Length: 627
Image 1 (spheres, rainbow, N blue to C red):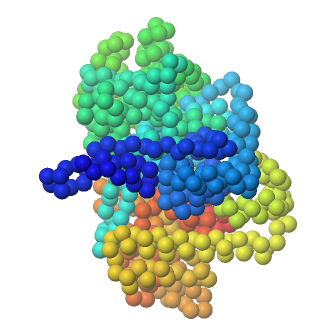
Image 2: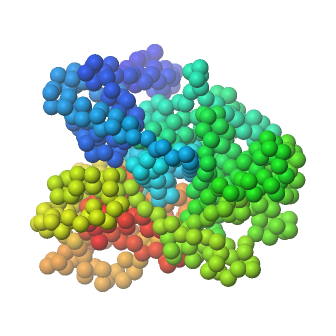
C-alpha cells in the first residue's frame, strides 16, 4: 500500500502490487481552510456570476494566476490546490482584501435585486455551455442555453433551467499524425465543479424517479447558481440504479437509440417531477429543441390524473403555456423513435391514466393515421405548444416550409411559426480591453443597459487610436495563446524539440487574421476558403499585405465527413508555403472560442444557405469589433 498527496489536493490510495500497476482506489477531496478574512471565497466561486463579471473573476486570477490557469478556470478546484500560505498571505494583503470586499459587495448587490413578476419560466435544454471546466455541451445550442440563463439573470427574468448532468460530458479532441480526429472523454468529478446537490428541508439529498420499461429509475438533483437563476441538473449515476440505468446520463449524445429516449424521458418527465419536488410551479414551459417534448406528455398525464380532464381537454390545458424553440433546419437532425420503442417505454405510462397508446403516438406524427410513422420529438413539441419560434428570419421561412404539412390548409407564410433571432450574452464574450475602454467613455451602467441604443451614443467619443490599440493588444494575446496551446499539445504527444519550437513561432501579430471556429458539420463548409488553393496561397504569402487563418472545431465522433474536413485543413496547414500561416487549434471549446472571437480581424462564416439556423458566433465577433 502506497499513499501520496498530489498537487491538486486529492489524496490517492494506490494498490495492486502483484501487477505493479498504480490505480486509484479512493479519492478524497481536500477542502481549503480559508482564513477568517476570506471566508466567502467558496461562496463567490460557487455562483457563476464570476464567469461574466470581470471584477469578480479577477479575485481568483489575482490569488494565484498559475493555479487559476492550471485548474481550467475552476474556482472549486483552484481553492483545493492553492497552498495554505498563499491564502494566509492574501488574507494579510490590503490590496487583495480590497478586491475581495469589492467582489463580496458585487455579489450581494446583484443577488439582492430579485425579479418580482408573478410568472415563472421553466427552460428545458439538453445541454448548457456555461464554463470551460464543465463540458456538458457540444456546440452552439448549449452555449446559447448558457447565455440564455445568464441574460435572464441580468435582466431579472423569473426563469429556472432544467437539464442533465453528464458524467463524461462531451468529447475532448486530439489529432493523430495524419490530422484525423481522436476523442477522449474525461470523467467529470461533480464535487470538483461549482455544482451543489439539491436537498430537502430535512437535509437529505433530493431524489425523484421515472419508470423506464417497467423499472423505477432514480434521479439525483443537482443545482448550479447562475447569478440570480437556478439551473437544476439530473443525474442517474447513483447507487440506487442498476448499471444499465446509471449509464443514462453518462455522456451527451452518446449511446444508442435506447439511451437517447431514456435521456429525453429523464429530461422531460424527470425534470418536471424535480421542479414539483423543489416546490416550484412554473407558469410557462419552454422547450429548447424537441429533446424535452416528453414534458408535454407528463403535463397531459397530470391534468388527466389530478384534474380528471379528458385527453383532449388535458392537451389544450397543457398546450396553452408551452413554448417550443426549433433550431433544426434539416429533417436529418430530428429525433425519431419507432412505434415499438415507444410502446416499450410508454404503454404502462398510458395505462396509468387511461390514455390510448395510439392516441399518444398521434402527437408525434405528421400523418396521425399512419401506424408505421415513427414518433417525432419535434412534431410532438409543435403539436403540444401554443407558441413556436425559429431563431432567425431566414430560419423562420425554412421552418415554415419544413412543417407546412401540419397546417395543410394554410399558405406557407401563414404557418404559425414566428422568429426570435438568437443573441449572445455580451458581458460573457466581450474582451476585457474593450470593456475597460467602455468603462472610461460610456455611462457607468453600460453593462446593465447595453440593450438600449442610447447607451452607445457616446461610442464616437472614443479615440480611434485607443480602439485600434485595444484590438492589436487582443490579437497579440490570441497569437500567444495559439502558440502556447499548440506547443503544449505537441509536448503531450512527445513531439520533437524542433516541432515544438516551430509551433512557438507560428503566426504573425501584424498580419490580417481570419478566424473560423465551430462544430465541423459539413453544411458549415469549413474548407470552402481552400477551394481555390492557388489563389488562397497567393493571398496568404503576400509579403506586402500578409494574411493568416486560424481554424478550430470538433466533429461528432460518428461524423466521418466532418472528421475528413478537419484532416484536409490540417494537411493544408502542413503545405510548405502555408506552414505557420494556416493553423488548426485542437480541442475547441468555450475558452478557445472566446480567444478567437476576441482577437481575430475577420470572422469567417460560410454555411450552406438555409441550413444554418442562426450564426451566433458572428455576433460574438461583432461585439469585439471583429468584421
